[in-house]
Amino acid sequence: MIEVTIVFDNYKGEPGFETGWGYSCVVKRNDEFLLFDTGADGQKLIKNLKRAGITPSLVSKIILSHAHKDHTGGLKEIQSLMPEAEIYAGVSFYEEVKKLLPYARLFKVSSEVLRITQGVYLTGELEGKVKETSLVLEAKDGVIVLTGCAHPGIEKIIEKVISEINPKVLAILGGLHLLDKNAEEIRNVIACLESKDVRLLAPSHCTGDLALKLFKQHFKERFLKVGVGTKITFESK
View (cartoon, rainbow, N blue to C red):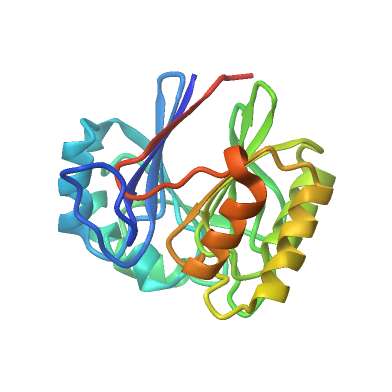
């Protein structure tokens, strides 16, 4: 079983969780816990983890999508609760993380696809306005793609996933950074996702209200409204 729990987001999900600009989610895959991004505020992230019933010390890996503070701001505080966790940071900001956490177990992510454990991959840093890495999880009916902000473009990310990891994309979760896009540009993204036969879309954070509205109209039951505290379950491969 794969469980993805959003523990930092600017959109409300479940009662009792604190919102904040940024993104973080916990992936429980079988008996392993992974943390994808750390939001902007460590204390708020820790409170939300507690609310979700997740023990920080159980997290074995921290994956950072990109260098922006709304995705790395909680890193130092949360890492102090999981000092043995492996941290994966893109080469574009690896030295910043090393300076912040000189004794942590750091791993450098290049532009190549990286398998970090069975059934779990990183796309590697993709070029864009901001270089960014996405997390890919193998599930029973395809792969789940987790994005921080999708700065390189979700189209480019999906192309790499399909060509180098798995041709079947089951779900996309996370920020899609369509805040500044108009309706026509968003419909082009929708057309791309349809052409790749994406089965479930659960975007949040920086996706933007217009994009969320158009996604909901188009994908209907394949669109999932999510926010901090939301848990999504998938069958393992």
